[in-house]
Amino acid sequence: MHDFHYVGGRLHCERVAIESLVNKFGTPLYVYSQHTLTDHFQKLDIALAPLNHLVCFAVKANSNLAVIRTLANQGSGFDIVSEGELRRVIAAGGDPRKCVFAGVGKTEAEIEFALRQGIYSFNIESEPELARINRVAARLKKTAPIAVRVNPNIDAHTHAKITTGTYENKFGIAFEQIERVYARASRLKNLRLRGLQMHIGSQLTEVKPFEQAVKKILPLAAKLADKYDLEFFSVGGGLGIVYNPALDSGSPEWWQTPVAKKILTPATYAATLVPLLQPAGLRILIEPGRFIVGNAGILVTRVEFVKRTGRKNFVIVDAAMNDLIRPAFYDSYHEIVPLRRKGGAMTESDVVGPICESGDFFCKNRPLAKVGEGDHLALLSAGAYGFVMASNYNSRGLAAEVLVNGNRAASVRERQPLAEIWKSESVPAWLK
Ligand SMILES: *Cc1c(COP(=O)(O)O)cnc(C)c1O
Image: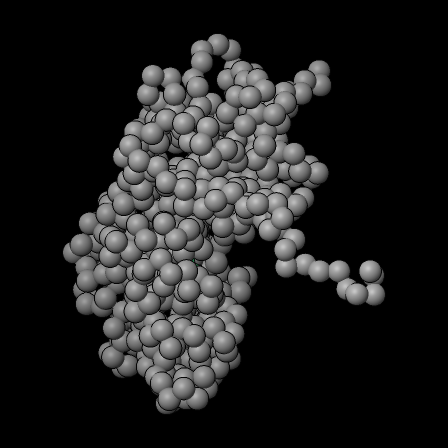
């Protein structure tokens, strides 16, 4: 569910007409709904209420300070993967003591910073990392709270680039080695064994892989908890969202299908996992990114040209793969709708950006309402892994971002001025 809908034929976010935002902030423009963010957070939080739990929003999905603050105000913790993300959480008013630090390549400097901030746990991805964290903690005369990420070798049945829980992936430590690794970690003086963690992949649309992984790991978690007095078990993130409601509901029009049939809801997720997790008596962490923010954001773009080649109908827009790389990177689907809904026939179209790459497209051969130069389109479900993956490729400035709350809207990131793109570059003296 989300808060983007048509009112009188004009696309709105909550009670704000998107066109009014385009007039004020220009395009390409990311628009986020605060209500969708809090609603998704609360749905998960409530579904997990029977457990002693903490929802840790995965900052990498969308790290805008306003998004972080919205969730921090809800009591959210955060799953971070770099010092930069931890600094963002702190800058946004989040609590470092509710942060878990993931990632396979934590540097000494990052470990030191996180230790000084008193984060809740380092989620360890290898044995050398264990030794490194112990060494940094010893130097600072601190004890580092840690959890080991178990790789359960379970296929999440999702896209190859977002599968993380099999032995083909670089993440975590193999299930069979975990007991030995905890025994080793327990002998390192500056570590405190605090939990156990898993994360099998992203955009999971069924509960089955979660269930399999939890069933496989939980007995191990219970055993280790007994032996080393662990406090928590993190089940990771990965809850999928609906990108293409036509696939899920049989209807081609998302605004007519507020309830898609085939979606992994927090209720379904909790109904399966809570009864499994509850008897363990551990604190349960969950690290959702996409589920909270994916449908809470759209990318608005202006139609620059319509190019008809006889064979194809190209709608050339002012957003590009540098603004939203998901279609090029993950073959992903984004629903594309006009800001002004008109009737009339659909035309099979490719929506493409101005970048000099054939991969710079948002859809191919898709029936779209007829649009012309100066019209605007919205790419839906662009809130997760959207702006955060933006780049300056083709020396294009980063898009602006806006947060809507009811009938209010505020800029939460100004459009990047072009001169900023090269301001840290220089020309060596010998060239002058
Ligand atoms: C990316 C990631 C998440 C969030 O994944 P989503 O699919 O966005 O929910 C959670 N935990 C870890 C360790 C991750 O790497």
